Length: 270
Image 1 (spheres, helix red, strand yellow):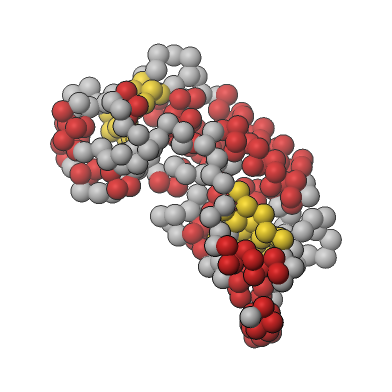
Image 2: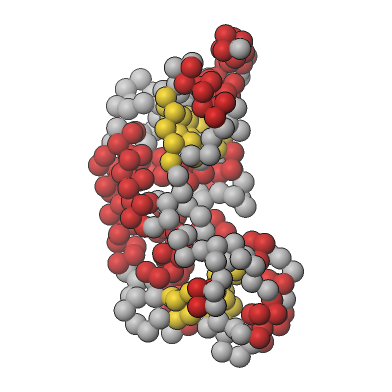
């Protein structure tokens, strides 16, 4: 089976209209990323030509954490062994949920696989930034990105009185308190509506509850019927704000954009 996969990969590589983008002296390994969160970080810390491909999720406006113009600079892969081998990377970066069979096949064929879990705090995300920069062979680039993240958070004045916020995600659910976005909300001066009412990770927040017991700020990151209901603009004492889904799940440079948006919302409420 391994010989078959290798033969197929070589055939695909030979038939491709354009070969993988390679630069002779990159100073680090060539990389294929299969994780939308590592896509965004590697796009910041890898040398030109070093990141051979990103995940197909980063090309999807509803799933990406990257700016569309940044994602457009890279080819994408669906994560199959054949696609990856055709690009001939030194390292594959994936989430911790990569299929065991895919990982085993890649490693059997001599491709190093490095996995990363989801960061649940800013500190964990900064650790991932530094680890990915070290993997790419440029720790200085990692420190630069980490400094930009710290600077973005330092600009937010969270010392003022906290504002209660409910984050309404796609599907009408709320984040848990160990989610990265919850950490960002705390750092930018918001308290959790969901936690105060006993709601946990992925619990459903009904429109009726919002109407009966509105938060000070409702951050709408979904597009369900209830989340677009006109009654939401008529609730006294509540401000409704749109919060892009691409700011919800990933760390790295996404933290910078999320912190900026949360700071804008906080200033408008204050």
